[in-house]
Image (cartoon, rainbow, N blue to C red; front, side, top):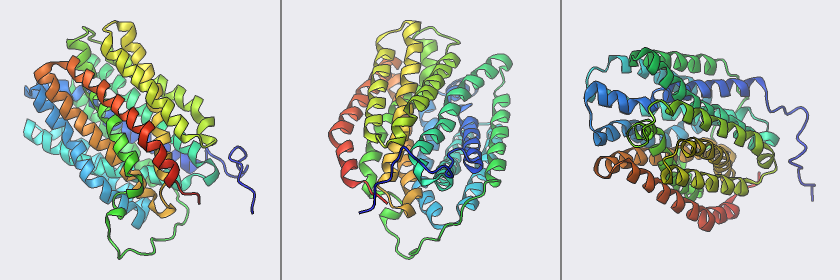
Length: 403
């Protein structure tokens, strides 16, 4: 019987921070920065520019998540079946083009159409890029590498809103934000086009089309669990600025909140690298979701500014632990030729949760207020934690594949 591979002693030749891996991370950072520089300010833009009500804002903003949700299962199949670099560059380019359409959308209806259609190429780009990241990582460093890869979009997700809020506060012009988003999207296209991928054998059997080619059935439990946590973050990320302004009287603290959220994400990845390298995925995920639960609870219980900002660090720490663990878990229950499908399954679940969070948060806020919306977040997150410890963890341990 051959000796077991020691995860603590990867080959010296298998460098984690290789040139192609760094390129993929830069492309991913740029993609998410372009998207999330607009996210927290779009409710204000729709309200001030088009006079949209809270529930209408929720419906308009959820359009991209619906489109991504519908398209991502197919994008996973495309990524697994065709040349990944060409697929990546194509969808990155489409996503870039849509940022130009934001500048041209002069009515609420047209803006809603553009925002909705944008979800398709954005969702496909994230699936393709995360799968390419796995391809350029040495197998002995994959768990750790996926964890650090997540930093690129996590930091962008946290920093971009801060930059967006600062730019809006200084210029007071949303067109500036749309142009900045367009420039970062262009960077993502250029960097993706320069990535060199290792040779990959084509999928042997393209004739059989089944549900498992579009959604990883072995990982459905991980996906369902992710929906709960994504719903909570969807409410937080989209309604934080307006909640802080209307409920807490904090008019300029959203930027600081997302900056602290970024700090929590960075700390979680630096602290959790060893745990991921050792393969302690279920422990890593469990710690993350419990920390996030505390964060969301503190957020809704107290209106004190100190608690408001402490929440940012806690949610950042929690999500920073949870996300790479969940991604490694779903990849671990997939075969090597199902990586695109595994990634699309997890991201589809995230889209579904984000979309539900945006719509549900807007509707609840319209009829019951923003405090009720965030109490709903706490309840859903607790349900997600219970689901993880009673079902998801056990099913993962039973179904993981060792290749």
